[in-house]
Image 1 (cartoon, helix red, strand yellow):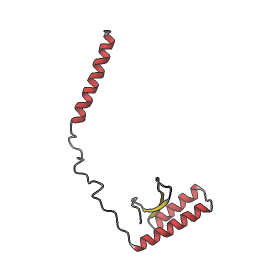
Image 2 (cartoon, one colour):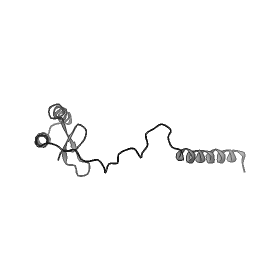
Image 3 (cartoon, one colour):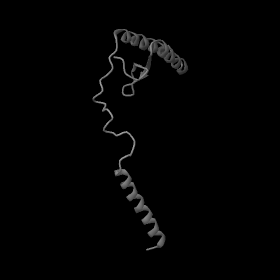
Image 4 (tube, one colour):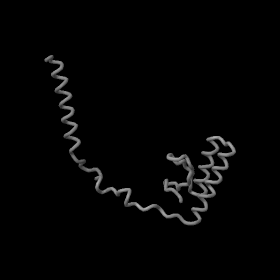
Length: 110
């Protein structure tokens, strides 16, 4: 075998070995994955009737502006105004393309 090939195999093998060793080690001071809350245990946020009514208003205004052909900058400006006034913003659902209202934390208003 070529000496350069031997060196390359040793370096590559050592890299793989170090990868598995460090992958098995637990972090010393960081947060543990066991302490983090799972997403299934979190309950969805409850919204008041007024917030739901405001969400309907926001979605209606946004959809009317889109139907009238307003540009993206104007729609972003509307969303910023909704965030100031109602603490809501309009987002697009990636799955089906429909729009929905969410609070500033990203919780969907039903």
